[in-house]
Length: 146
Image (cartoon, rainbow, N blue to C red):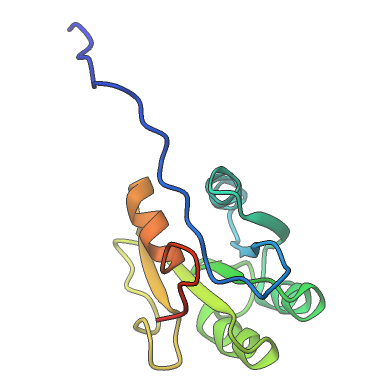
């Protein structure tokens, strides 16, 4: 079967979060599966968000959040240890204003709905790059948390 021309390639729209004044956007990635961490790290870097650290479990991720105080926490529901919901709540308590995005397989519903003390957004795998960018949050200069 011949390959179809998909049209011109377009660079994905860059996401811009409301980072603390004078600071670069930064993230911590927490996922029990190394392949998921690699995927999320690559997508964040593609959108000019510095990955400060990575963790397999909730305890290590929370330590990184407290130490590095990132703008964003990206958490996969499949952690090597601990609960993704508890990690989000504890990280928010440690770093007010932290944006948290939960990543989950579409076959497994997330433990907490977006908002109401849970993550700011839930991203179901598999996802498209546009869905990833939308989950990162409001775009554009001066955009705040929703």
